[in-house]
Length: 116
Length: 112
Image 1 (spheres, rainbow over the protein chains, first blue to last red):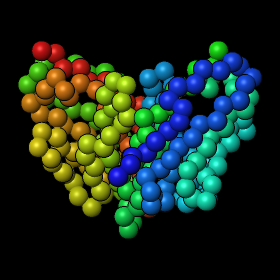
Image 2: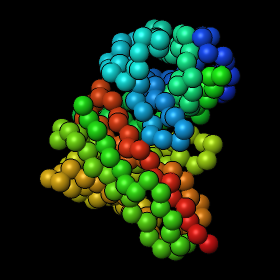
Image 3: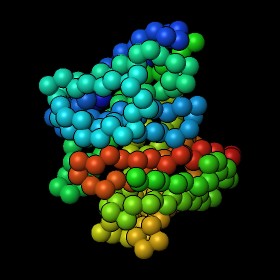
Image 4: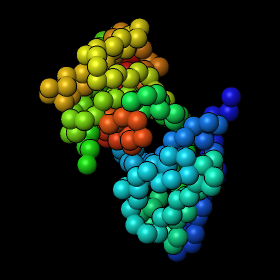
């Protein structure tokens, strides 16, 4: 079974440009999350989809970030325009809940974004 | 909102000794507490988790304890080995359809 895949693995852009990150979750997983890890610090929550709906986007830093999940399958995270502080590793994860409990998160390998 | 604090940020132990990492959470409604290990350049992976209806869970050299009253949980690694060197993250969730919030991570180094 294929795991969570992310593309690109690394992107280098200049301040003011646009970048779109893509995540393909494990087939059948309703939950899809985006996280960001900056400078080796915490894994910071950005947002959570349940199928195609945004369940929680309280972690999105500002309106320069836009996430979509087409038909409840893959997801994209667009940063427009990019700023220096957006640099970091963006992780996508998917899961399937079990009854009352959150299911195990399966992470992708991350997309490293460098904004110059 | 939910907040998870993790200590220490770095930990160095002699090979064969035990390592303990501690976390506290703020939301008493949290009911699921996973631990993830991230090796250098790799993706985070689940190593053990515990649900709020139990106080302790063990898997070979790894154990997790949960104190719901104090709202804290801990990871215990015994007989540490070089391959245990990694960054460890605790996390908490309020259940189905809820986000999972992570602690700030602990970089564990095993000295030969």
